Image (tube, rainbow, N blue to C red; front, side, top):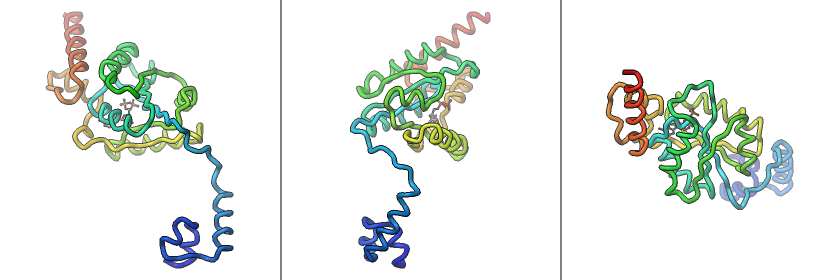
Length: 210
Ligand code: ADP
């Protein structure tokens, strides 16, 4: 690597590359670099993350992300978006109950719901991180758009993406509901308590429809 490129990386990197640039050169570069970057607050001592979603219902894919996220952040708030336009299978109250049934074993995970802007919800909780999952390229475009919009709305809140576990990357709430509605086996795709609720819901619908 040439000295000019090494100098651009600044003092922590340039010596490691065996390129110690002239002092004046580094200072000049650092000044220029910092003048282009918006100053951000330092890392808070207690990092709170929000994992937003519909969770209609929670699947083992969500659960895997929550479990891994709970090891990364001091507090993780799993928050249901209240979205009347989506016509969910389970009401927000039912989804809160389902999440609590599954997540009570994680001491630093909480359940909440929100409407309005996600960044406002995050700020109200003192959260500095939004956690999202990426299953396939098809998730990426939408997630990127959301992350950039949220950065624009709340520049101090960072979106963190976690790759889905390969065992769960094909699972979505929508597909689980579809397969279950057609009589398919969903054991292992959702927590057992969720499977029971789905069975009860299906039975209820059939009885009502009979
Ligand atoms: P939304 O309606 O916001 O897509 P979801 O509850 O379906 O709500 O998803 C919430 C987040 O969880 C999204 O970032 C989504 O990509 C991620 N997610 C959904 N299913 C899985 C899975 N099987 N593995 C990993 N992440 C997932």
